[in-house]
Image 1 (spheres, helix red, strand yellow):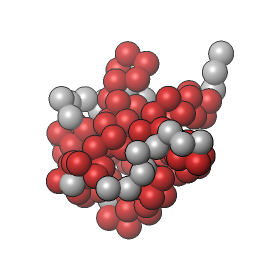
Image 2: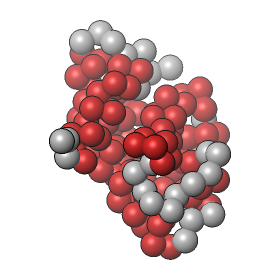
Image 3: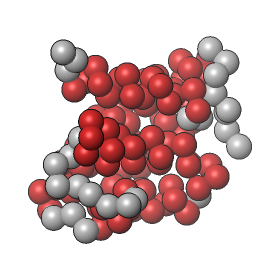
Length: 121
């Protein structure tokens, strides 16, 4: 059986080649400094530049393992789910997002070096 860390890493690895390394490196700091809702809203606004990262995080938090990795977090989009979440669920979602984005930060540059990333726009 895989640990949650292994599942995060596997999920990121499947998507890292599509995420520009510079976006992956900036994302965790954006969440820590601005908050998860604000960061997700920004990523959606800048959809062409941040879409793949936003969709990967949304898939992980809302849909992975038949219901997402954060109990109580549900919605059509990650932004909708976060806006409607209670405080405890929001905190858990933020912690899980930071753990996921930590893997993204580590693995996306390796995928880019291997020639698999689209690079920066």
